[in-house]
Each structure stands twice: as structure tokens, then as C-alpha cells.
Image 1 (cartoon, chains in turn cyan, brown):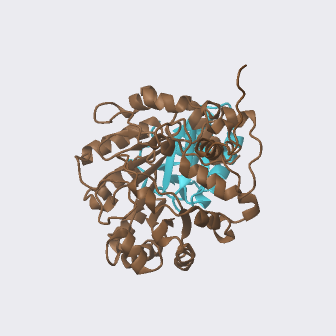
Image 2: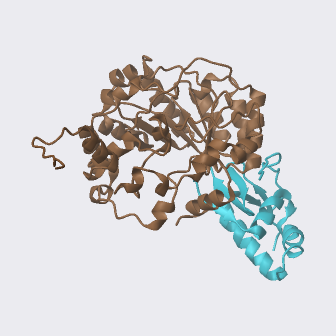
Length: 105
Length: 364
């Protein structure tokens, strides 16, 4: 399977509330909340770190989860958010459109 | 419960100001007859001050940011402010009259990822709309702006404030919204001016028109459901708070004053003198607003409508008591359901003349 690279879209709003990331698409107003694991992937979506490395570094090493389960769940999460234009996905590194964006709190 | 309601509840529990309305200027190129603002500039916050406030709001956890005025585009730094807000990942909604929006502005709003733009349209007839805004040609320009925004794929809402001058034009505005492919909202509430001047209230539509609006299926959907008598209030209603003002929502003026809501001008602090979060957490005024439950409202807690009324604590405050009734909302509840409110009954009793025949028992 080829590597996938993920980056956050600029057409979103995001804020951390009580440990969960709220994300809303400015394109279709879809609203999501991301749990702790999804938030970790979201934060690591810098456009140039391969998804497999994000899963290994930000998920498997931080949360008690089998690598295969983590990879499958991460793939599903990425597919779901990319369908709404919230994450950009490519098979080659992306110029990170979200660099410099700050989701405080 | 929707995910959004769930997050709002969590924000209330955590004391997070989830939604902030920031007016960046009170200056305006229109002079709407019903407007509650003074349009002179009394020392607006600078670009740097506003950016600092935005930084503080992001830190405080604010997600929804409404940028409004006045007319936001009267500020030359509007796009700089907007760009900063979007860099901080706020969900930004912009309220504007649109008369300064052309292709270039619409394009910029889209590039910056504004979620929604609200434009006030009072009538589909230029002579009515322009007489309200006192700006000749304003309807034409606002409608053109909507088309520019739509062509960029932006979400636009037409806000139709109803008053005596346009009270029969809502169907025309609704048809215009349909033609333009935008959302339509109607608001029959005229609010007193920020300085307490109530002269604009004479523009409020009469009760008979309010009644017609609430019984119009094109406006309210299911009339039977919308106008249903209120169910008896449960304990949850009496322990509940009236609205998000001061709980998860705040308003900031162009001068840095913090209020619980744009319609609730209770001075609670100023971001030029204090950090926003210090005001939000520690202001005695905001804490007082937060402490009020439905059971604490001397008149409204005895009212049949207490669980369904749209009672605005800000309008009540402008009538003299934030725990008191808001007459406009009493009217709304009455004309929606046909059932008198406790406030109306109380007033009727106090205004009633004495009985024609009076019997007094003389002590012997």
C-alpha cells in the first residue's frame, strides 16, 4: 500500500473544548468532534509526515492500541474527514496549507 | 440532543465563551430608521487591539465569532482583522449590509473561509427598503452583493427585520431569497437604542400583524405546533437559565466594552483595561446574570409561558429589571398562542377600575 500524506484544510474552524477538538467545515458546515486519538492525528497532519508514521508516533506510542487497529481506524478517520474537505489527502507530500494556523484553548 | 447542543452544554459546564459577537465599528453607510446604535466613532479599538482581543478569545475557547457593526467594511482593516481571526481558526460569521461588496470582496471572503454572511433586506421593493436604510440604491447594491457572494459559493442569509414600514413585504423578501438561493430569516423585534432611548419602539409591528406572522405556515412551518399552548413547566424549566447570554456567549463593542449579549447592554468590563478572561470569569455583572434561574423571575416564574417564552433578559434589562418580564416577548408569546402572559394579567389587574357596586363591611 502506498504512503498517504494528510494536511488540514484552511477552510475549517477548530477549537479544543474539554479535551475534544471541535471541527467545522466552512464549505458544508459539517460539524465534528474528535476524541483524544483523532485529535492527536489531526494535530500531526502537517502534510509531509506519512500517515503510517503519524499513527506510530502520535497514536501507538501514546495510546494503548494494537498497531493494526490503530492503522485501520486512522484510515477510516482520514477518509471520513477528507470526504468533507476537512483533511487533504495525497500520495505525495503536501505543501501544508494549515501552517501558521492556531487552534488554541 | 444534537452534537452542537451537546457541545454548547459542555461549554456552559466548563464556563467557556463559545460564541462571541464582536462589533468592530458602529460607523455605517446606512442610517436605518430602527437602528439601535449611535454611528459616530467614539474611539474604536485599533487593529492591534482587536487582534489582541481575538488572540484572547481563541485562548478562552471561543469557537463562533460574529463580526458585525455598524458596517464592517467601513473599517479599512476589515480584511486584516478577518484574516487574523481565520488564522486563529474561528468559525466566522459576518453581518453586513453588503453595499460595499463586489467581486473582489466576495472572493476574499471565500478565500478566508467565512462560514456565513448575513445581509439585511427589508423589502423587495426599492422604495421601501431604501426608505428604511435612508441610502438611495441600497437594495440594488445589497442584492448585487448577494449575487457576488453566491457566485463565490458562499452561504448567505437574508435577515428580514419587520417593522411598520415593511410589515407586509415579508412574502416578497422570502420570494427574493428563494430566487437568489439563500436562506431567509425573519425577526419581528425592534430593540431600544443602546443608550436606552425607546423612541424606535414606535416602529414595532402591531399585535394583529404579529399574530398573522405567527400563523403563516410559509414563515413558521407547522402552525399548529408553533402556536401550541405551552405545556406545564417542569422542574428542569424552573432550574434552567433563559439564554446563552453570559453563559456561553458574550458581546464586545468597538470600544472594548463587554456585555452579556449585543441585546443586553449591561456593562461588565472593558478589554482595554482588563483581560477578557478576567472579565468573563470574575465580573460581578456576568456572575449575576449567570446566577439567575427561571424560578428567580418574580413575574415570569408564575407564567404559563415560562418554559416556551423567548424572554430576552437583555430586553427585560432595558425595561428596567433583568429579572422582570420583557414586554416584547410577552406580546410574542400571547400572539403566538392566544394565551395571556402573567405580566399581561398583572397589568390588566392593576389598570382595571374598581367594581361598579362596592360593599364594605362596617365594623360595629
